[in-house]
Image 1 (cartoon, rainbow, N blue to C red):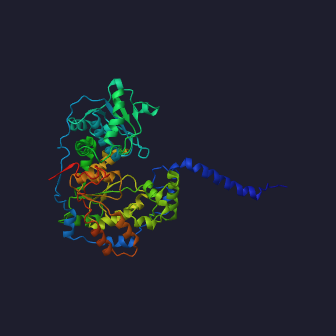
Image 2 (cartoon, rainbow, N blue to C red):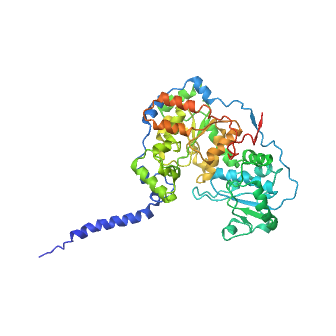
Image 3 (tube, helix red, strand yellow):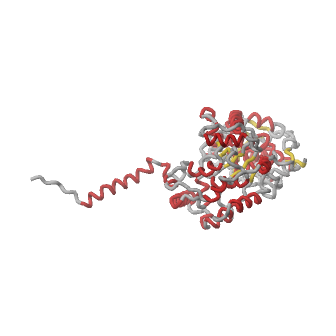
Amino acid sequence: MNYVRQIPTSRRMAWPLQMGGLLMLLLPSLFPSLFSPLSRSYTSVFSEWNAPRPMHSHLLNSSLQQQTSKPQEAELWSPLPDQGWEACADKQETQSLGRKSQGYIQVFLDGGLNQQRMGICDAVAVAKILNATLVIPYLEVNPVWQDSSSFADIFDVDHFISVLSGDISIVKELPSDYSWSTREYYATGIRPTRIKTAPVHASASWYQENVLPVMQSYGIVAIAPFSHRLAFDNQPSDIQHLRCKVNFHGLVFVPHVRRLGDALVNRLRSPPSLNNASSATLFHNWQNDRAGAGKYVVLHLRFDKDMAAHSACDFGGGKAEKLALAKYRQVLWQGRVLNSQFTDEELRGQGRCPLTPEEIGLLLSALGFNNSTRLYLASHKVYGGEARISALRQLFPFMEDKKSLASSHELSEVEGKASLLAAVDYYVSMQSDIFISASPGNMHNALLGHRAYKNLKTVRPNMTLLGKLFLNKTIEWSEFQQAVQQGHKNRQGQMRIRKEKQSIYTYPAPDCMCKA
């Protein structure tokens, strides 16, 4: 008689549960991008089980039907009139080199490209204040962007030294007597030549009292960290002029970045490529006698996972997205996010929510840009992926970016290097007819100031107004458009005089400009 061994029911049920538990333990190691809070993958299952849908469908549908009149388009693309100011930072006299240098000064700069850019300008100013010789600044590797590009990889060093040769002494590297003064040296212990307590927005006198004695004693001083370490107020006029001279004239990108940027600009100013019948129809419209023909607008879109999570706003991705962002917020900031205590309605009413790609598209459309506008997207990665920008692409089918305009061969020198990619975007943005940024930040601030210096049209979104408009779910397109146009009439590049504590790099008048 054959007997079949019976497996107890409890054991039969336990086996798949055990396998399921094992699988859950292995998933983080097999697919780390799905679980890591620091991952740069923006298509994680936690945020895209429910692809984000349009949050303002009624406005989107209406905007797709709108037509821009020729007079409105002509006004939209017209350059700014003369505002009575002219760029003159390179023409201002600073105290020429005379006295012998007091020693060498090194700075170690963290942050992204534009934060480092401002740090470079401040480093030149501090070297002038101390009558020191500046060593080409060291750019730290940003833990988020992971780009190890050096100053010389991004900026034209010879141009930098040449432009500032009459103002300060600059060396590419330290002489052999000081070759020991390296980043590694300062990372491995407390060193008497390192200043690590420089206060944010320190005065010139602070450097003279605290940094100069160290440099005079050892012949060298290293300042780290050095971000936002020089005050914007109560500085001698020649120091202010020098900071702007560095920013607007001394810092030029390396030749291969400029070549790539020029190629992108030329393609943006040329008729778009055609690949289907609908494109051909749009091209016919584009070819007509238009004020916007041969022109383009740059949209700086920063909508990454860090920003979305930190804002604590709702972006239409459903419960899955809310939970994913809440967990991400908890892991990164341990609940120390001020916005978390407010509702989405309260945050939007105060203008504290970053604009989504859909919302910035509706803003552009309300201002008069349409489906024939050449739009360049200056962006890293967008949280939510292609689904998040689909509404923006609907509104602007001629939207381009680096990858759509350039070949993989052309991009080979900058691919995977966040600072160089940002440099290309910066260069293309400076050549554009109009620039708009979807959210405040270092790139927004840097370009706002640089374009103001050159009297170029730059749209500053009225975040409080837009937040309130987008909260109104019954608003009609005509009312929305009228409110947007009225609320942005004086936010398109009109000169704003710098106020106390404001950055000289964002508001260059009157410190760096002259009355025409």
